[in-house]
Length: 263
Image 1 (cartoon, rainbow, N blue to C red):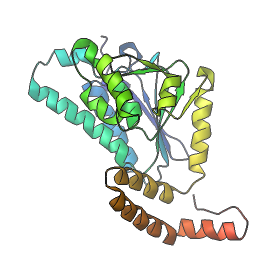
Image 2 (image 1 turned 135 degrees about the vertical axis):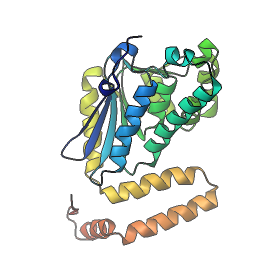
Image 3 (image 1 turned 45 degrees about the vertical axis):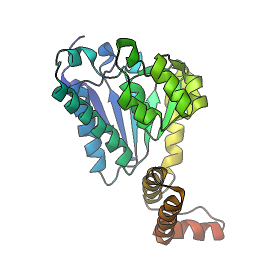
Image 4 (image 1 turned 120 degrees about the vertical axis):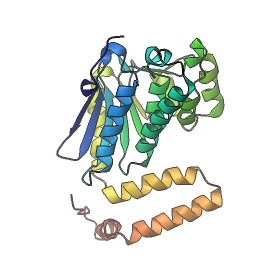
């Protein structure tokens, strides 16, 4: 594998609308989640979390692959359980940061997403894929069950579908990924950026505060029983309703006009 300087692993830009675009930029190594890549991702996501003007995150990639998972060569060079524990803890921190961000995170998947790369897609709130993309958790092919990718995968698709992928290592197409709930939309390769932009436009037209409340509630309620979920949801809706964005939105609905939300 060709070594790529850490500074070149990630492109991080925020446009005037508050959209943070993070592009995995190690195409020669298929954008593996090396130690350096995980550090760069964490740094970029921490910057998003600290940005009060952030509205959304898009995770994309350069080259033929979206992300080929962990760097097996790097892992093999450190045959030490403490090293592996630190590595997977670092990866888990990246995944949990994605979940805890107040803003929606979109995966823009142009190619292969395997193992921890598939995990990265599954951990994003939304995903748009090219027809050329494919998805797999094929660590089992080298004797390594994709345990941590399975956490995110099993929260996207049905258990038996997830287990089949995990146990066999077989890949699924972009269309199959869409049918199973791993991605939201599949489009032609030359339409991928436009479809992501279209989805962004829908998100940016909604108030940031409501999206933030909704995202946090959505994931919290999934981890509770139904009664507790309703209690959490009711509290969130009450807080949302008294917020100025909902007050303005409801008043605009009553007055049959578009709502006026501050930028």
